[in-house]
Length: 253
Image (cartoon, rainbow, N blue to C red):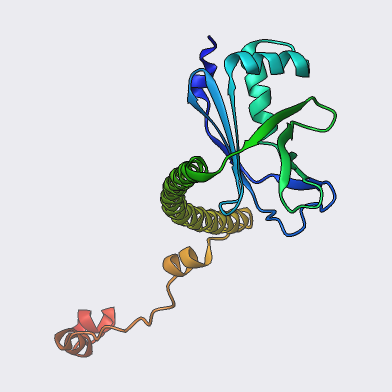
């Protein structure tokens, strides 16, 4: 027995409704929801309802699905057939074909038809109308499963939202670090340019045999005033007291 049905994930969708017959569904509800799931490993169940007046159902065993596989003409393994069936039901081209009874607003038959893509084989499920308690139970089960699916999606959405929030915080921190890094790069670049300009000026001054303006100012101070020191008084008096005589006068005396 193929075990792939044990891993069959429930599928929900809204089929496109097409009416055939005299009344073409005049006055009938056209909003339906289908639910495809595996109640056990050996059966596939399809439920279609408008939640008001009409509910349809189809249960297929593994052997019936194998017959469908042969009639549709899909080769390959059993799992490949199930994957194709799932892809068809999840596609945008799922139709609910309703045939109206002559001179009546009631339906004669219904089929759920799915096709993976245009030109590919069509998957078709003939549906049986259910009423009374069976219909109520089917609608109740469909509603509960829809709610579970909604809660699951809501949980995934909240998880994704929290992850996005954390990523936003990380991006904000990294952006701030990046801005600081670029600011430091710009500051270092300006310092390097300034140092290069100073080095260039130094080279020009050395080539011309001159010191840089700053060094020249430091090495060549302005002219200083020299003050005359006064001669001591005793030295000036001795100079004035000297009497000069020629040699002849000295001899006579």
